[in-house]
Amino acid sequence: MCTLEKRGSIFFLTLTGDDDHRFNPTVIGSILSALRQAKSEATRGSVLITTSQGKFFSNGFDLAWAQAAGSPSKSLERLSHMVSLFKPVVAELISLPMPTIAAVQGHAAAAGFLFALSHDYFLMRSDRGVLYMSEVDIGLSLPDYFVSTFRAKLGSVIALRDVLLRGEKVKAGDAVRLGIVDEAHRDEKSLAEAAIGLGEKLGARKWKGDVYKEIRKSLYPELCETLGLGAEKVNSSL
Image 1 (tube, rainbow, N blue to C red):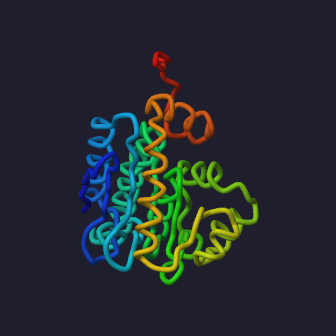
Image 2: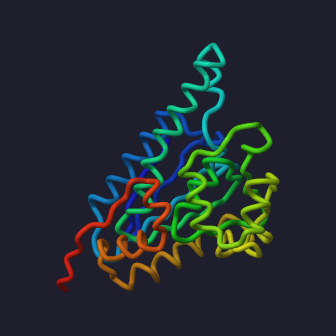
């Protein structure tokens, strides 16, 4: 599950508990509700910081829930259901009318990696945690919006190859070098301080949220087409 808390102009979306924050329909619904609440309460200067409790940021989809369906075909149906449910989460992040920051304090795998990558800024701690796209190792193809997000966010063909075709487990320092992560910080405390500091700097700019989101969307035309996000009219008045 997750919580949403607002402190000043910053919304904090936190994946709660000591588990590995697997995404099942209940958890996905909780995240989507939190994002929509933040959108409805957004004002000039709002910022979203997403983080988590425990060892993991997120270990991706809840494969145990899918496998509990009782048969391979029903398990695949459940997995497809989660893939469909998660697409609006990415769409909400790409169209959220405020800057977004992922403060990844533990392992982020598969859909968990995608979730972090869907934010504008990606910070990571260097003393614990890896980024890992497990699909090539476990024999699962990538949904279209996964591919579009990685193509939009990773400018390096080497990074795309190593992450998606080799299943590399990427530590923070290498993630910075490959251009996946903006900054690496030595521990959880320094990561949190850096995320809040960045959030305060971004919030102080007092950007218009609808303008900010439309500029963001214009940067990723292929991704927005995949997500079904069209252009919206923006009120240009001050």
